[in-house]
Length: 130
Image: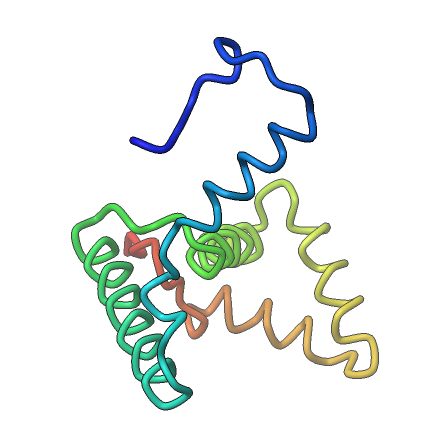
């Protein structure tokens, strides 16, 4: 960066340093969307979102999904579903979580477990081996 300077080589008091920093920041140009009106900004962010979604989708299709919150949640849901369906260690914890989440609807946890064991609830990210 041509405007940057190495503070260790320059002796100045804190007020001077702060003013120098202010001047450098003031010289920067605004971001690419800072000067847009509301409609243009909406269009800019819609395009940015579309590109981001396409990138995430492409990464998932290539077998190396992006580590987004949604993908991580899907992976954890797949793990919980497989644990519940097979009765593996931890199935009791999954049942307890379902019971807490659906406290007002007591039949739901049993229904989820029945569907998981019967193969009606399928994993999203992990291919079933049957």
